[in-house]
Amino acid sequence: MSQLAAFIKQQRQKKPILSMTHVVYGYPTVQESLDWMERLMKEGVDFIEVQFPFSDPVADGPSIVAACHKALEQTLDVETCLTQLGELAKGFPESRIVLMSYLNPMYRYGLDKLAKRAAEENILGLILPDLPIEQAATYQATCEKYQVDPIWLVTPVTPKDRLAMLASQASGFLYCVARSGVTGHSVHETKMHEGKSKTTSLDDYLAEIKVHSSAPIGVGFGLRERAQIEQLIGKADLAILGSALLDAYNKGGQEEGIKLIKDLFY
Image 1 (cartoon, rainbow, N blue to C red):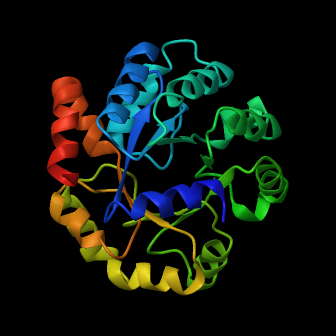
Image 2: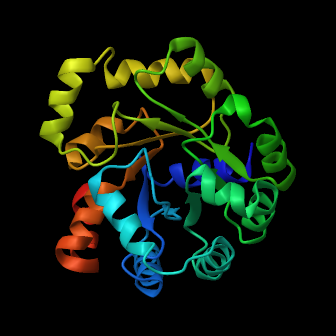
């Protein structure tokens, strides 16, 4: 069992489902994003998924795209980000940070160096949504060398044979997208979208994954209501809050964001 999976298992003994919150590094400024991460960990969130911004975040909806573009008005670099995240994490042993970005900036930084530096800063998981597992053998070997988990994504429309392959190779946790499309749809939009393209229920989808994987399961994309979080209890290990949290932060700063987390998880 990897360090990340072991941490999830340990925390799950205390809670029915863990919280993973999403923050864009550098939005609206680097210091404000670091202050927000620190506040989230002080409030007791289990994970922060920190997104290093990229100009074309193809898996993300309008709120996160806008935040990435705003963040990129500054000069950002991966090395500084990793160092700052490592410093931040030292004071919060009950929380973990995972780094999410897209292949382009991480490839330019160097995937071998990325895994090595992540391990040094106690960042135990890396999420690169646009890196196909079929082209990731060297990356996977590097992550294994440094004991950092590459986190793979699956969706309800992932073909069954591919879903089985991804699930069987999952370590740390498997990121299960709750529906097809990008992040950030409202509940109503999500239901409309699913009504047109839904091929299986969320419960059946998660059950299918568990047939092929013993890794913890995280579920994200479109979570905005407490009922959605409660629906995941007993079926997933992490509920991932992204666009909804960013929208709350944009509306009323840290206090509005914390209110949402408390409404959903406590």
